[in-house]
Image (cartoon, rainbow, N blue to C red; front, side, top):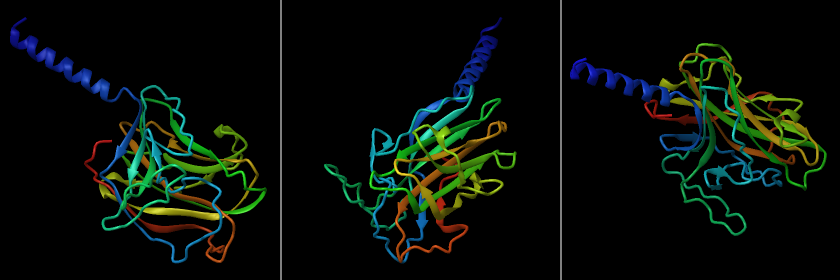
Length: 266
């Protein structure tokens, strides 16, 4: 075999190895900085006690949000999952969190959310989630719950492939949830090429038991070829009812827009 043929063969084998490594699947913790948001802030501030900690995801440690349990997902062969700190800062905003005990707030103008990325394998489905036990001060009763989410996808062909929910269970195991509430109800998530998607808020009265765990669960149901989805969640709250709460909301609310670079590597 000539040296030229050997060189060509080696080049092809190297390219194949790189491709296999790229799509072999795995779990990573990452950060998305190509994103931003324009979020409609409420006209009235709600000052009632909050029964979930770090629901605005302002505080992070070692790549994970403080107070949230983010277990490493059990991976379906060939699938990829990334857990992400997602920058939702809007240009010109002046945001800063109240520092936790012994901690420091994030820099002014910083507004992170938490995200998951899923890339399909050859077969099966893939899900991942996070959870947190509610504050000990919460007693059995009805509470006002708000969860915000956006999602965008690429190469997804199957309807209702990209799905996300929240719910309450008795333990940190997501299987303890008896009623899941959908967070992104559309047939398809926004297209990656659109570079923009609405920031949906689900707001409702929920009966919650003392000591319950709040769960967020999301993923892709079908292995569409080389497809992927990004989910981003932020601004989660559990509070008592007050004059600042609109109890007439019975559907999702459009509370702004999230933007990203469709050319960014995921």
